[in-house]
Length: 264
Length: 264
DNA sequence: GTAGTCAGGCTGTCAGACAGATTGAAGGAA
DNA sequence: TTCCTTCAATCTGTCTGACAGCCTGACTAC
Image (cartoon, rainbow over all chains, first blue to last red; front, side, top):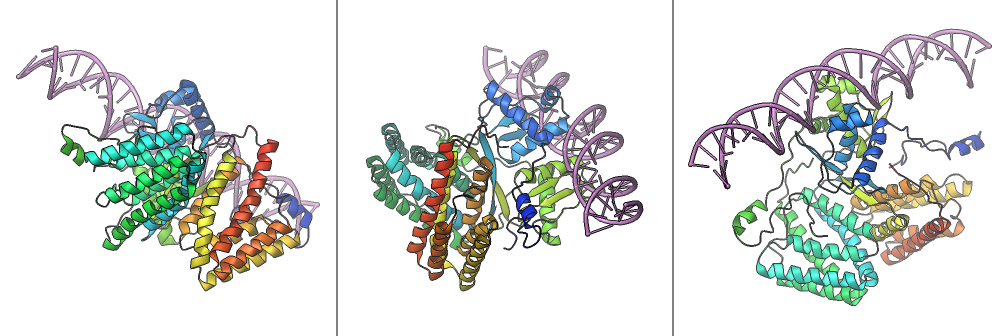
Protein backbone atom coordinates (compact mmCIF):
# COMPACT_ATOMS: atom_id res chain seq x y z
CA UNK A 1 0.00 0.00 0.00
CA UNK A 2 2.96 2.25 0.56
CA UNK A 3 5.81 1.42 -1.75
CA UNK A 4 4.24 1.22 -5.18
CA UNK A 5 7.51 0.88 -6.99
CA UNK A 6 9.76 -1.25 -4.84
CA UNK A 7 12.49 -1.45 -7.41
CA UNK A 8 13.93 1.72 -8.83
CA UNK A 9 11.99 3.68 -6.28
CA UNK A 10 14.97 5.92 -6.21
CA UNK A 11 14.89 9.59 -5.56
CA UNK A 12 12.03 11.76 -4.50
CA UNK A 13 15.09 13.36 -2.98
CA UNK A 14 13.91 16.10 -0.73
CA UNK A 15 16.67 18.49 0.03
CA UNK A 16 20.29 18.73 -0.87
CA UNK A 17 21.70 17.64 -4.17
CA UNK A 18 18.21 17.77 -5.61
CA UNK A 19 19.41 18.28 -9.15
CA UNK A 20 21.56 15.16 -9.18
CA UNK A 21 18.71 13.09 -7.80
CA UNK A 22 16.44 14.61 -10.37
CA UNK A 23 18.75 13.57 -13.15
CA UNK A 24 18.94 10.03 -11.81
CA UNK A 25 15.17 9.91 -11.77
CA UNK A 26 15.18 9.81 -15.53
CA UNK A 27 17.11 6.58 -15.54
CA UNK A 28 15.65 3.15 -15.81
CA UNK A 29 17.34 -0.10 -14.99
CA UNK A 30 18.78 -1.43 -18.22
CA UNK A 31 17.87 -5.00 -18.72
CA UNK A 32 20.96 -7.11 -19.00
CA UNK A 33 20.49 -9.14 -22.16
CA UNK A 34 20.63 -12.70 -21.00
CA UNK A 35 21.22 -15.55 -23.34
CA UNK A 36 17.69 -16.95 -23.07
CA UNK A 37 16.22 -13.79 -24.50
CA UNK A 38 18.51 -14.01 -27.47
CA UNK A 39 17.42 -17.58 -27.93
CA UNK A 40 13.76 -16.58 -27.84
CA UNK A 41 14.37 -13.85 -30.39
CA UNK A 42 16.11 -16.34 -32.62
CA UNK A 43 13.28 -18.81 -32.20
CA UNK A 44 10.65 -16.20 -32.98
CA UNK A 45 12.61 -15.35 -36.07
CA UNK A 46 12.86 -18.99 -37.04
CA UNK A 47 9.15 -19.54 -36.53
CA UNK A 48 8.31 -16.57 -38.71
CA UNK A 49 10.69 -17.55 -41.48
CA UNK A 50 9.79 -21.22 -41.42
CA UNK A 51 6.11 -20.34 -41.33
CA UNK A 52 5.36 -22.53 -38.33
CA UNK A 53 1.73 -22.48 -37.27
CA UNK A 54 -0.04 -23.21 -34.01
CA UNK A 55 0.23 -26.92 -33.32
CA UNK A 56 3.43 -27.41 -35.27
CA UNK A 57 6.36 -29.07 -33.62
CA UNK A 58 9.55 -27.17 -32.94
CA UNK A 59 12.95 -28.70 -33.57
CA UNK A 60 14.24 -30.76 -30.70
CA UNK A 61 16.17 -29.11 -27.92
CA UNK A 62 19.35 -30.82 -28.99
CA UNK A 63 19.08 -29.55 -32.54
CA UNK A 64 18.28 -26.03 -31.37
CA UNK A 65 21.21 -26.08 -28.99
CA UNK A 66 23.59 -27.22 -31.69
CA UNK A 67 22.27 -24.81 -34.27
CA UNK A 68 22.40 -21.83 -31.96
CA UNK A 69 25.66 -22.98 -30.43
CA UNK A 70 24.38 -22.80 -26.86
CA UNK A 71 23.94 -25.39 -24.16
CA UNK A 72 20.75 -27.39 -23.94
CA UNK A 73 20.06 -25.88 -20.52
CA UNK A 74 19.86 -22.47 -22.12
CA UNK A 75 17.43 -23.72 -24.73
CA UNK A 76 15.39 -25.38 -22.01
CA UNK A 77 15.19 -22.24 -19.90
CA UNK A 78 14.14 -20.20 -22.89
CA UNK A 79 11.43 -22.69 -23.79
CA UNK A 80 10.38 -22.80 -20.15
CA UNK A 81 9.70 -19.11 -20.38
CA UNK A 82 7.50 -19.57 -23.39
CA UNK A 83 5.85 -22.54 -21.83
CA UNK A 84 4.77 -20.67 -18.73
CA UNK A 85 3.56 -17.88 -20.97
CA UNK A 86 1.49 -20.34 -22.95
CA UNK A 87 3.38 -19.85 -26.18
CA UNK A 88 4.53 -23.44 -26.43
CA UNK A 89 3.40 -26.74 -24.99
CA UNK A 90 5.89 -29.40 -24.12
CA UNK A 91 5.24 -33.12 -24.26
CA UNK A 92 7.68 -35.39 -22.53
CA UNK A 93 9.41 -37.65 -24.96
CA UNK A 94 7.79 -35.97 -27.93
CA UNK A 95 8.80 -32.36 -28.32
CA UNK A 96 7.72 -28.73 -28.02
CA UNK A 97 4.67 -27.55 -29.90
CA UNK A 98 3.68 -24.05 -30.81
CA UNK A 99 0.54 -23.07 -28.90
CA UNK A 100 0.15 -19.41 -29.79
CA UNK A 101 0.96 -17.02 -32.55
CA UNK A 102 4.43 -15.62 -32.31
CA UNK A 103 4.06 -13.19 -35.13
CA UNK A 104 6.76 -10.56 -35.03
CA UNK A 105 5.51 -7.89 -32.70
CA UNK A 106 3.32 -10.01 -30.53
CA UNK A 107 4.36 -10.22 -26.96
CA UNK A 108 3.02 -11.62 -23.76
CA UNK A 109 2.25 -10.26 -20.34
CA UNK A 110 1.46 -12.27 -17.26
CA UNK A 111 -1.69 -11.63 -15.30
CA UNK A 112 -1.85 -12.48 -11.63
CA UNK A 113 -5.19 -13.39 -10.16
CA UNK A 114 -5.94 -14.20 -6.59
CA UNK A 115 -8.29 -17.04 -6.13
CA UNK A 116 -10.67 -16.40 -3.29
CA UNK A 117 -14.21 -17.17 -2.43
CA UNK A 118 -15.79 -14.68 -4.76
CA UNK A 119 -13.22 -14.77 -7.50
CA UNK A 120 -15.73 -16.27 -9.89
CA UNK A 121 -17.91 -13.25 -9.45
CA UNK A 122 -14.93 -10.96 -9.82
CA UNK A 123 -13.77 -12.35 -13.10
CA UNK A 124 -17.33 -12.08 -14.27
CA UNK A 125 -17.48 -8.42 -13.34
CA UNK A 126 -14.31 -7.72 -15.24
CA UNK A 127 -15.75 -9.57 -18.18
CA UNK A 128 -18.87 -7.44 -18.03
CA UNK A 129 -16.91 -4.21 -18.13
CA UNK A 130 -15.09 -5.39 -21.22
CA UNK A 131 -18.09 -6.96 -22.90
CA UNK A 132 -20.08 -3.75 -22.66
CA UNK A 133 -17.32 -1.76 -24.32
CA UNK A 134 -16.66 -4.31 -27.00
CA UNK A 135 -20.34 -4.65 -27.78
CA UNK A 136 -20.73 -0.92 -28.14
CA UNK A 137 -17.73 -0.74 -30.44
CA UNK A 138 -18.91 -3.65 -32.50
CA UNK A 139 -22.34 -2.13 -32.96
CA UNK A 140 -20.81 1.14 -34.10
CA UNK A 141 -17.86 -0.01 -36.16
CA UNK A 142 -18.63 -3.40 -37.63
CA UNK A 143 -18.26 -3.76 -41.37
CA UNK A 144 -20.95 -5.27 -43.50
CA UNK A 145 -19.08 -8.57 -43.72
CA UNK A 146 -18.62 -8.67 -39.97
CA UNK A 147 -22.32 -8.13 -39.35
CA UNK A 148 -23.05 -10.96 -41.72
CA UNK A 149 -20.56 -13.14 -39.89
CA UNK A 150 -22.22 -12.34 -36.57
CA UNK A 151 -25.60 -13.26 -37.93
CA UNK A 152 -24.26 -16.47 -39.43
CA UNK A 153 -22.79 -17.39 -36.07
CA UNK A 154 -26.07 -16.72 -34.36
CA UNK A 155 -27.95 -18.83 -36.89
CA UNK A 156 -25.49 -21.61 -36.32
CA UNK A 157 -25.85 -21.28 -32.56
CA UNK A 158 -29.61 -21.50 -32.90
CA UNK A 159 -29.35 -24.56 -35.10
CA UNK A 160 -26.93 -26.29 -32.76
CA UNK A 161 -29.06 -25.43 -29.78
CA UNK A 162 -32.21 -26.82 -31.30
CA UNK A 163 -30.43 -29.96 -32.39
CA UNK A 164 -29.66 -30.67 -28.77
CA UNK A 165 -25.92 -30.80 -29.30
CA UNK A 166 -23.31 -28.92 -27.35
CA UNK A 167 -23.97 -25.25 -27.68
CA UNK A 168 -20.75 -24.24 -25.93
CA UNK A 169 -18.49 -23.92 -28.97
CA UNK A 170 -21.19 -22.24 -31.03
CA UNK A 171 -21.88 -19.72 -28.29
CA UNK A 172 -18.20 -19.05 -28.04
CA UNK A 173 -17.95 -18.51 -31.78
CA UNK A 174 -20.89 -16.13 -31.74
CA UNK A 175 -19.37 -13.93 -29.05
CA UNK A 176 -16.01 -14.10 -30.69
CA UNK A 177 -17.50 -12.81 -33.91
CA UNK A 178 -18.63 -9.77 -31.96
CA UNK A 179 -15.16 -9.27 -30.51
CA UNK A 180 -13.69 -9.49 -33.96
CA UNK A 181 -16.16 -6.95 -35.24
CA UNK A 182 -15.03 -4.35 -32.77
CA UNK A 183 -12.16 -2.37 -34.17
CA UNK A 184 -10.02 -3.33 -31.20
CA UNK A 185 -8.95 -6.97 -31.14
CA UNK A 186 -7.34 -6.50 -27.76
CA UNK A 187 -10.72 -6.59 -26.05
CA UNK A 188 -11.39 -10.07 -27.31
CA UNK A 189 -7.96 -11.21 -26.21
CA UNK A 190 -8.37 -9.93 -22.68
CA UNK A 191 -11.91 -11.23 -22.35
CA UNK A 192 -10.89 -14.67 -23.50
CA UNK A 193 -7.98 -14.77 -21.13
CA UNK A 194 -10.15 -13.66 -18.23
CA UNK A 195 -12.66 -16.30 -19.22
CA UNK A 196 -9.94 -18.90 -19.33
CA UNK A 197 -9.04 -17.88 -15.80
CA UNK A 198 -12.69 -18.25 -14.91
CA UNK A 199 -12.81 -21.73 -16.28
CA UNK A 200 -9.60 -22.66 -14.59
CA UNK A 201 -11.36 -21.93 -11.33
CA UNK A 202 -14.58 -23.59 -12.33
CA UNK A 203 -13.89 -26.03 -15.17
CA UNK A 204 -17.46 -26.94 -16.05
CA UNK A 205 -18.86 -25.53 -19.27
CA UNK A 206 -21.32 -24.13 -16.79
CA UNK A 207 -24.71 -22.82 -17.55
CA UNK A 208 -25.43 -26.16 -19.12
CA UNK A 209 -28.62 -26.49 -17.23
CA UNK A 210 -29.76 -22.91 -17.22
CA UNK A 211 -29.51 -21.98 -20.86
CA UNK A 212 -32.81 -22.15 -22.55
CA UNK A 213 -35.10 -20.50 -24.98
CA UNK A 214 -34.98 -17.29 -22.94
CA UNK A 215 -31.22 -16.97 -23.19
CA UNK A 216 -31.33 -17.81 -26.86
CA UNK A 217 -33.84 -15.03 -27.37
CA UNK A 218 -31.51 -12.61 -25.63
CA UNK A 219 -28.71 -13.66 -27.92
CA UNK A 220 -31.00 -13.09 -30.86
CA UNK A 221 -31.83 -9.60 -29.67
CA UNK A 222 -28.13 -8.90 -29.18
CA UNK A 223 -27.42 -10.12 -32.68
CA UNK A 224 -30.14 -7.90 -34.13
CA UNK A 225 -29.01 -4.85 -32.21
CA UNK A 226 -25.38 -5.22 -33.22
CA UNK A 227 -26.28 -5.86 -36.83
CA UNK A 228 -28.57 -2.85 -36.83
CA UNK A 229 -25.82 -0.72 -35.35
CA UNK A 230 -27.98 0.12 -32.37
CA UNK A 231 -25.27 0.43 -29.74
CA UNK A 232 -27.49 1.26 -26.80
CA UNK A 233 -29.83 -1.65 -27.36
CA UNK A 234 -26.88 -3.95 -27.90
CA UNK A 235 -25.35 -2.89 -24.61
CA UNK A 236 -28.67 -3.44 -22.94
CA UNK A 237 -28.90 -6.96 -24.32
CA UNK A 238 -25.37 -7.98 -23.44
CA UNK A 239 -26.05 -6.76 -19.93
CA UNK A 240 -29.15 -8.92 -19.77
CA UNK A 241 -27.19 -11.92 -20.98
CA UNK A 242 -24.49 -11.27 -18.44
CA UNK A 243 -27.17 -10.91 -15.78
CA UNK A 244 -28.27 -14.46 -16.54
CA UNK A 245 -24.70 -15.70 -16.36
CA UNK A 246 -24.15 -13.85 -13.12
CA UNK A 247 -27.24 -15.47 -11.69
CA UNK A 248 -25.65 -18.82 -12.50
CA UNK A 249 -22.42 -17.78 -10.87
CA UNK A 250 -24.21 -16.76 -7.71
CA UNK A 251 -26.07 -20.04 -7.65
CA UNK A 252 -22.81 -21.93 -7.93
CA UNK A 253 -21.34 -19.86 -5.15
CA UNK A 254 -24.32 -20.40 -2.87
CA UNK A 255 -24.32 -24.15 -3.38
CA UNK A 256 -20.66 -24.12 -2.52
CA UNK A 257 -19.80 -26.27 -5.49
CA UNK A 258 -16.41 -24.65 -5.31
CA UNK A 259 -14.16 -26.32 -2.84
CA UNK A 260 -10.49 -26.83 -2.27
CA UNK A 261 -9.67 -25.97 -5.80
CA UNK A 262 -5.98 -25.46 -6.23
CA UNK A 263 -5.08 -24.46 -9.73
CA UNK A 264 -1.52 -24.82 -10.97
CA UNK B 1 -11.88 -18.38 -36.57
CA UNK B 2 -13.17 -21.88 -36.58
CA UNK B 3 -11.51 -23.96 -33.93
CA UNK B 4 -11.90 -21.93 -30.76
CA UNK B 5 -10.37 -24.57 -28.59
CA UNK B 6 -7.38 -25.90 -30.47
CA UNK B 7 -6.33 -28.25 -27.70
CA UNK B 8 -8.92 -30.64 -26.35
CA UNK B 9 -11.22 -29.53 -29.11
CA UNK B 10 -12.69 -32.97 -28.89
CA UNK B 11 -16.28 -33.72 -29.64
CA UNK B 12 -18.89 -31.58 -31.25
CA UNK B 13 -19.61 -35.04 -32.45
CA UNK B 14 -22.34 -34.79 -35.00
CA UNK B 15 -23.98 -38.09 -35.45
CA UNK B 16 -23.06 -41.56 -34.34
CA UNK B 17 -21.83 -42.42 -30.91
CA UNK B 18 -23.08 -39.13 -29.59
CA UNK B 19 -23.28 -40.33 -26.04
CA UNK B 20 -19.69 -41.44 -25.89
CA UNK B 21 -18.55 -38.13 -27.30
CA UNK B 22 -20.73 -36.41 -24.80
CA UNK B 23 -19.02 -38.20 -21.96
CA UNK B 24 -15.58 -37.45 -23.34
CA UNK B 25 -16.51 -33.81 -23.57
CA UNK B 26 -16.41 -33.62 -19.81
CA UNK B 27 -12.79 -34.66 -19.71
CA UNK B 28 -9.87 -32.35 -19.53
CA UNK B 29 -6.26 -33.18 -20.13
CA UNK B 30 -4.74 -33.94 -16.78
CA UNK B 31 -1.52 -32.11 -16.35
CA UNK B 32 1.27 -34.57 -15.78
CA UNK B 33 2.78 -33.47 -12.54
CA UNK B 34 6.31 -32.45 -13.38
CA UNK B 35 8.95 -31.80 -10.81
CA UNK B 36 9.06 -28.04 -11.37
CA UNK B 37 5.44 -27.70 -10.38
CA UNK B 38 6.10 -29.50 -7.16
CA UNK B 39 8.99 -27.17 -6.55
CA UNK B 40 6.80 -24.14 -7.15
CA UNK B 41 4.17 -25.49 -4.78
CA UNK B 42 6.84 -26.04 -2.16
CA UNK B 43 8.18 -22.55 -2.70
CA UNK B 44 4.74 -20.98 -2.44
CA UNK B 45 4.28 -22.87 0.78
CA UNK B 46 7.64 -21.71 2.06
CA UNK B 47 6.89 -18.11 1.15
CA UNK B 48 3.59 -18.24 2.97
CA UNK B 49 5.00 -19.87 6.07
CA UNK B 50 8.10 -17.72 6.21
CA UNK B 51 6.00 -14.64 5.61
CA UNK B 52 8.12 -13.38 2.74
CA UNK B 53 6.92 -10.11 1.28
CA UNK B 54 7.34 -8.47 -2.10
CA UNK B 55 10.95 -7.42 -2.47
CA UNK B 56 12.33 -10.06 -0.13
CA UNK B 57 15.10 -12.30 -1.30
CA UNK B 58 14.53 -16.00 -1.75
CA UNK B 59 17.09 -18.55 -0.58
CA UNK B 60 19.80 -19.24 -3.11
CA UNK B 61 19.26 -21.85 -5.76
CA UNK B 62 21.86 -24.08 -4.19
CA UNK B 63 20.17 -24.00 -0.81
CA UNK B 64 16.77 -24.64 -2.33
CA UNK B 65 18.12 -27.53 -4.36
CA UNK B 66 19.71 -29.12 -1.32
CA UNK B 67 16.68 -28.56 0.90
CA UNK B 68 14.22 -29.94 -1.63
CA UNK B 69 16.61 -32.66 -2.69
CA UNK B 70 16.42 -31.83 -6.37
CA UNK B 71 18.97 -30.68 -8.88
CA UNK B 72 19.74 -27.03 -9.31
CA UNK B 73 18.49 -27.22 -12.89
CA UNK B 74 15.05 -28.12 -11.61
CA UNK B 75 15.08 -25.21 -9.22
CA UNK B 76 16.21 -22.94 -12.00
CA UNK B 77 13.47 -24.05 -14.36
CA UNK B 78 10.85 -23.56 -11.70
CA UNK B 79 12.13 -20.09 -10.93
CA UNK B 80 12.29 -19.36 -14.64
CA UNK B 81 8.60 -20.07 -14.79
CA UNK B 82 7.89 -17.60 -12.04
CA UNK B 83 10.25 -15.12 -13.54
CA UNK B 84 8.51 -15.04 -16.88
CA UNK B 85 5.23 -14.78 -15.03
CA UNK B 86 6.50 -11.80 -13.11
CA UNK B 87 6.35 -13.48 -9.74
CA UNK B 88 10.05 -13.22 -9.06
CA UNK B 89 12.87 -11.08 -10.35
CA UNK B 90 16.33 -12.52 -10.74
CA UNK B 91 19.52 -10.55 -10.38
CA UNK B 92 22.69 -12.13 -11.62
CA UNK B 93 25.13 -12.71 -8.84
CA UNK B 94 22.66 -11.59 -6.22
CA UNK B 95 19.63 -13.81 -6.01
CA UNK B 96 15.91 -14.14 -6.70
CA UNK B 97 13.52 -11.58 -5.29
CA UNK B 98 9.82 -11.86 -4.78
CA UNK B 99 8.03 -9.46 -7.12
CA UNK B 100 4.38 -10.35 -6.57
CA UNK B 101 2.16 -11.77 -3.92
CA UNK B 102 2.09 -15.53 -3.94
CA UNK B 103 -0.66 -15.91 -1.43
CA UNK B 104 -2.03 -19.41 -1.43
CA UNK B 105 -4.59 -19.53 -4.18
CA UNK B 106 -3.16 -16.87 -6.42
CA UNK B 107 -2.41 -18.01 -9.90
CA UNK B 108 -1.29 -16.51 -13.13
CA UNK B 109 -2.51 -16.43 -16.66
CA UNK B 110 -0.56 -15.30 -19.66
CA UNK B 111 -1.96 -12.61 -21.91
CA UNK B 112 -0.92 -12.41 -25.53
CA UNK B 113 -0.96 -9.03 -27.17
CA UNK B 114 -0.11 -8.22 -30.72
CA UNK B 115 1.88 -5.10 -31.11
CA UNK B 116 0.79 -3.10 -34.07
CA UNK B 117 0.64 0.48 -35.09
CA UNK B 118 -2.30 1.47 -32.96
CA UNK B 119 -1.69 -0.87 -30.06
CA UNK B 120 -1.05 2.06 -27.73
CA UNK B 121 -4.52 3.33 -28.42
CA UNK B 122 -5.95 -0.15 -28.00
CA UNK B 123 -4.50 -0.76 -24.61
CA UNK B 124 -5.77 2.63 -23.64
CA UNK B 125 -9.28 1.74 -24.72
CA UNK B 126 -9.20 -1.41 -22.67
CA UNK B 127 -7.98 0.59 -19.74
CA UNK B 128 -10.85 3.00 -20.15
CA UNK B 129 -13.43 0.25 -20.08
CA UNK B 130 -11.98 -1.07 -16.86
CA UNK B 131 -11.36 2.32 -15.26
CA UNK B 132 -14.96 3.35 -15.74
CA UNK B 133 -16.22 0.24 -14.00
CA UNK B 134 -13.74 0.39 -11.20
CA UNK B 135 -14.44 4.04 -10.60
CA UNK B 136 -18.15 3.41 -10.40
CA UNK B 137 -17.64 0.57 -7.98
CA UNK B 138 -15.28 2.57 -5.86
CA UNK B 139 -17.70 5.48 -5.64
CA UNK B 140 -20.47 3.14 -4.56
CA UNK B 141 -18.69 0.70 -2.31
CA UNK B 142 -15.72 2.42 -0.73
CA UNK B 143 -15.48 2.31 3.03
CA UNK B 144 -14.86 5.40 5.08
CA UNK B 145 -11.22 4.50 5.54
CA UNK B 146 -10.79 3.93 1.83
CA UNK B 147 -12.28 7.30 1.00
CA UNK B 148 -9.90 8.88 3.46
CA UNK B 149 -7.02 7.02 1.83
CA UNK B 150 -8.05 8.26 -1.59
CA UNK B 151 -8.17 11.82 -0.36
CA UNK B 152 -4.81 11.46 1.33
CA UNK B 153 -3.32 10.17 -1.90
CA UNK B 154 -4.76 13.07 -3.80
CA UNK B 155 -3.40 15.56 -1.28
CA UNK B 156 -0.03 13.93 -1.62
CA UNK B 157 -0.24 14.06 -5.40
CA UNK B 158 -1.06 17.74 -5.24
CA UNK B 159 1.83 18.40 -2.88
CA UNK B 160 4.27 16.47 -5.02
CA UNK B 161 3.05 18.18 -8.14
CA UNK B 162 3.40 21.65 -6.70
CA UNK B 163 6.84 20.90 -5.37
CA UNK B 164 7.94 20.21 -8.92
CA UNK B 165 9.05 16.68 -8.19
CA UNK B 166 8.09 13.60 -10.15
CA UNK B 167 4.37 13.16 -9.97
CA UNK B 168 4.39 9.73 -11.60
CA UNK B 169 4.54 7.61 -8.47
CA UNK B 170 2.06 9.79 -6.64
CA UNK B 171 -0.39 9.64 -9.52
CA UNK B 172 -0.02 5.91 -9.61
CA UNK B 173 -0.67 5.69 -5.89
CA UNK B 174 -3.77 7.83 -6.20
CA UNK B 175 -5.32 5.68 -8.89
CA UNK B 176 -4.33 2.56 -7.08
CA UNK B 177 -6.16 3.77 -3.98
CA UNK B 178 -9.28 3.95 -6.11
CA UNK B 179 -8.75 0.42 -7.42
CA UNK B 180 -8.31 -0.79 -3.88
CA UNK B 181 -11.51 0.93 -2.83
CA UNK B 182 -13.55 -0.96 -5.36
CA UNK B 183 -14.77 -4.19 -3.89
CA UNK B 184 -13.12 -6.08 -6.73
CA UNK B 185 -9.33 -6.13 -6.60
CA UNK B 186 -9.19 -7.94 -9.91
CA UNK B 187 -9.90 -4.73 -11.79
CA UNK B 188 -6.80 -3.10 -10.43
CA UNK B 189 -4.74 -6.14 -11.32
CA UNK B 190 -5.89 -6.22 -14.90
CA UNK B 191 -5.56 -2.47 -15.35
CA UNK B 192 -2.05 -2.48 -14.01
CA UNK B 193 -1.05 -5.36 -16.23
CA UNK B 194 -2.52 -3.69 -19.27
CA UNK B 195 -0.72 -0.52 -18.31
CA UNK B 196 2.49 -2.42 -17.94
CA UNK B 197 1.98 -3.68 -21.46
CA UNK B 198 1.40 -0.10 -22.51
CA UNK B 199 4.64 1.01 -20.96
CA UNK B 200 6.51 -1.86 -22.45
CA UNK B 201 5.54 -0.47 -25.82
CA UNK B 202 6.18 3.11 -24.88
CA UNK B 203 8.50 3.20 -21.87
CA UNK B 204 8.37 6.92 -21.14
CA UNK B 205 6.40 8.01 -18.08
CA UNK B 206 4.59 9.92 -20.79
CA UNK B 207 2.37 12.86 -20.27
CA UNK B 208 5.29 14.50 -18.56
CA UNK B 209 4.82 17.60 -20.62
CA UNK B 210 1.09 17.68 -20.83
CA UNK B 211 0.08 17.34 -17.23
CA UNK B 212 -0.73 20.64 -15.71
CA UNK B 213 -3.08 22.47 -13.47
CA UNK B 214 -6.01 21.39 -15.63
CA UNK B 215 -5.30 17.69 -15.21
CA UNK B 216 -4.73 18.17 -11.52
CA UNK B 217 -8.11 19.81 -11.24
CA UNK B 218 -9.71 16.85 -12.98
CA UNK B 219 -8.05 14.53 -10.51
CA UNK B 220 -9.40 16.68 -7.70
CA UNK B 221 -12.90 16.49 -9.09
CA UNK B 222 -12.55 12.74 -9.42
CA UNK B 223 -11.38 12.49 -5.85
CA UNK B 224 -14.33 14.58 -4.63
CA UNK B 225 -16.85 12.57 -6.62
CA UNK B 226 -15.57 9.24 -5.40
CA UNK B 227 -15.39 10.41 -1.83
CA UNK B 228 -18.90 11.79 -2.07
CA UNK B 229 -20.14 8.52 -3.49
CA UNK B 230 -21.36 10.23 -6.61
CA UNK B 231 -20.78 7.46 -9.12
CA UNK B 232 -22.01 9.28 -12.20
CA UNK B 233 -19.88 12.33 -11.62
CA UNK B 234 -16.90 10.12 -10.84
CA UNK B 235 -17.32 8.23 -14.10
CA UNK B 236 -17.60 11.53 -15.91
CA UNK B 237 -14.36 12.75 -14.39
CA UNK B 238 -12.38 9.60 -15.05
CA UNK B 239 -13.53 9.79 -18.65
CA UNK B 240 -12.29 13.36 -18.87
CA UNK B 241 -8.95 12.33 -17.43
CA UNK B 242 -8.70 9.48 -19.86
CA UNK B 243 -9.61 11.84 -22.67
CA UNK B 244 -6.55 13.87 -21.81
CA UNK B 245 -4.38 10.79 -21.75
CA UNK B 246 -5.82 9.64 -25.03
CA UNK B 247 -5.02 12.99 -26.55
CA UNK B 248 -1.42 12.41 -25.51
CA UNK B 249 -1.44 8.95 -27.02
CA UNK B 250 -2.73 10.26 -30.31
CA UNK B 251 -0.09 12.96 -30.30
CA UNK B 252 2.60 10.34 -29.77
CA UNK B 253 1.18 8.25 -32.58
CA UNK B 254 1.01 11.17 -34.96
CA UNK B 255 4.56 12.29 -34.30
CA UNK B 256 5.66 8.74 -34.93
CA UNK B 257 7.74 8.68 -31.78
CA UNK B 258 7.18 4.98 -31.86
CA UNK B 259 9.57 3.24 -34.13
CA UNK B 260 11.22 -0.10 -34.38
CA UNK B 261 10.33 -0.95 -30.85
CA UNK B 262 10.81 -4.60 -30.21
CA UNK B 263 9.74 -5.53 -26.72
CA UNK B 264 10.99 -8.69 -25.12
C1' DG C 1 33.25 10.21 4.41
C1' DT C 2 34.52 8.86 -0.05
C1' DA C 3 36.69 5.75 -3.12
C1' DG C 4 39.49 1.58 -4.14
C1' DT C 5 40.34 -3.45 -3.27
C1' DC C 6 39.32 -8.07 -2.31
C1' DA C 7 37.16 -12.41 -0.97
C1' DG C 8 33.05 -15.05 -0.76
C1' DG C 9 28.55 -16.07 -2.49
C1' DC C 10 25.37 -16.42 -6.25
C1' DT C 11 23.62 -16.68 -10.88
C1' DG C 12 24.31 -17.79 -15.98
C1' DT C 13 25.87 -21.17 -18.92
C1' DC C 14 27.85 -25.41 -20.52
C1' DA C 15 28.88 -30.51 -21.02
C1' DG C 16 27.84 -35.15 -20.08
C1' DA C 17 24.87 -38.72 -18.40
C1' DC C 18 20.73 -41.54 -17.55
C1' DA C 19 15.69 -42.78 -16.83
C1' DG C 20 11.21 -42.67 -18.70
C1' DA C 21 7.90 -41.34 -22.40
C1' DT C 22 6.79 -41.27 -27.22
C1' DT C 23 6.71 -42.53 -31.85
C1' DG C 24 7.03 -44.81 -36.04
C1' DA C 25 8.42 -48.87 -38.32
C1' DA C 26 9.31 -53.75 -38.60
C1' DG C 27 7.34 -58.09 -37.96
C1' DG C 28 3.90 -61.49 -36.76
C1' DA C 29 -1.09 -63.05 -36.31
C1' DA C 30 -5.87 -63.27 -37.96
C1' DT D 1 -4.77 -57.19 -46.40
C1' DT D 2 -5.49 -55.53 -41.78
C1' DC D 3 -4.63 -55.34 -37.01
C1' DC D 4 -1.74 -55.91 -33.08
C1' DT D 5 2.74 -56.47 -30.75
C1' DT D 6 7.45 -55.46 -30.27
C1' DC D 7 11.35 -52.68 -30.52
C1' DA D 8 14.79 -49.33 -31.41
C1' DA D 9 15.55 -44.49 -32.17
C1' DT D 10 14.40 -40.12 -30.46
C1' DC D 11 13.24 -36.72 -27.16
C1' DT D 12 12.27 -34.57 -22.80
C1' DG D 13 13.00 -34.42 -17.59
C1' DT D 14 16.40 -34.43 -14.25
C1' DC D 15 20.95 -34.67 -11.94
C1' DT D 16 25.92 -33.77 -11.37
C1' DG D 17 29.94 -31.14 -11.80
C1' DA D 18 32.30 -27.23 -13.45
C1' DC D 19 33.66 -22.41 -14.50
C1' DA D 20 33.14 -17.41 -15.64
C1' DG D 21 31.20 -13.20 -14.40
C1' DC D 22 28.44 -10.31 -11.38
C1' DC D 23 27.13 -8.64 -6.71
C1' DT D 24 27.79 -7.64 -1.91
C1' DG D 25 29.87 -6.51 2.18
C1' DA D 26 34.06 -5.74 4.68
C1' DC D 27 38.37 -3.82 4.94
C1' DT D 28 41.65 -0.21 3.79
C1' DA D 29 43.66 4.12 2.29
C1' DC D 30 43.19 8.94 1.55
